[in-house]
Image (tube, rainbow, N blue to C red; front, side, top):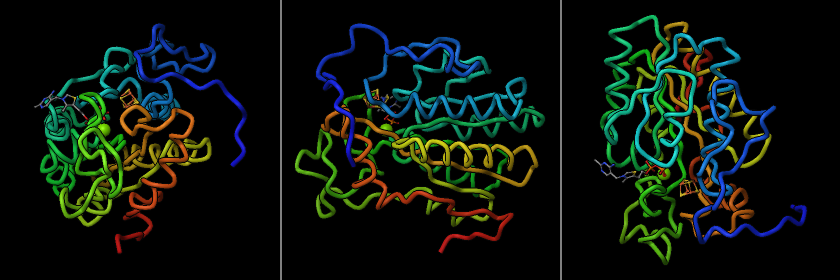
Length: 270
Ligand SMILES: Cc1ncc(C[n+]2csc(CCOP(=O)(O)OP(=O)(O)O)c2C)c(N)n1
Ligand code: SF4
Ligand SMILES: [Mg+2]
């Protein structure tokens, strides 16, 4: 793909000033148009599309978000919806309690792959299996980003991380857990999809998935789940501008883009 010549962004040191979103384009539910996540990080894009979906569906007043712990948690104080902070991995259980106590609210979780697929795998599996009326969002970048970029259970084979410098090797580190495919096997999950934020087309398609998942909850059809593949150029040891292509070439072939299960349309896991 030909790419415009842009200046190379130095990601070896922390940014000295906050990245700014163009004010006119900052979603109304994000209170501040600035963030301190790394240049080229995919998580601000994912947060943006989540908040745009809530706003466009007119759900802000009834939304209670439950955050896990990761780089994206920086947004938990910056959103104009209620946000609860869960212990690492426990967001789906906390969300279950909130939804059962306040059934008229819209409850969703935001977790990273380390938080969800490593530290709290049983929480999300049981929540989806029970068919709780909540929506779980996973921001999957294949690393424990916030604590330095080491391997998670979702890291793909061959991926270089802080503790797999030669690339993840099945013999030494085991195989990746392809979480959306696993969740799609659970009958309580009414809608399961995997999107990505590495191209503008994928962002637009992922936003549709997010809206579909929230609509499933609103209409009381069961649990819904959307995994969003996000760039982490810092944790991947790749140049900032190469991260979207790295995601496409290395991560998407394993964690495949698309709707994995949609009970309403009889789309089932293979
Ligand atoms: C019980 C517990 N264990 C470990 C940590 C340390 N910790 C904080 S953030 C984090 C990494 C999270 O990685 P991930 O969920 O993939 O999110 P990312 O930063 O990549 O978005 C870890 C291990 C913690 N806060 N609590
Ligand atoms: S370490 Fe990775 S996930 Fe965390 S802010 Fe930087 S690019 Fe984003
Ligand atoms: Mg991660």
